[in-house]
Amino acid sequence: MKTKSLNVRHTLIKVGPQCNERVEIFREGQAEPIHVLDRAFPVQFGDEVECAIQSLTFGGVVARKLTKKDEAIEYESNVPEAVALYLAAEEAI
View 1 (cartoon, rainbow, N blue to C red):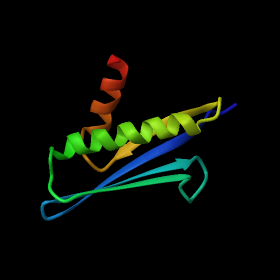
View 2: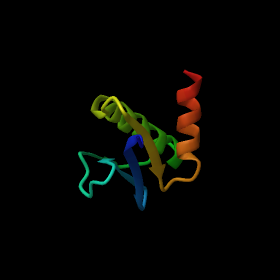
View 3: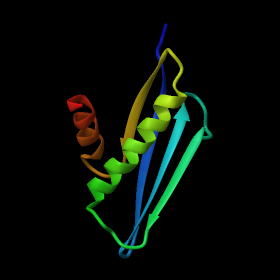
């Protein structure tokens, strides 16, 4: 039996000094997200990777609450290295 998954998709959209982010959680095979988090920061208080990791962390917490017993969680982001660093930090805990 194939393991189903939830996908946590992070998108960073920069508009001048403002950092906007969206985290969407999708159940495999569904087009509409089951959860959406939008964050907007008037000024960038950290670098892009730091912002992405914060959003992936929140998305991961929500996804773990939504997972069913046979589901895995997959992560993606348009910020290079963010997913790898997030997963490395999760393993270190």
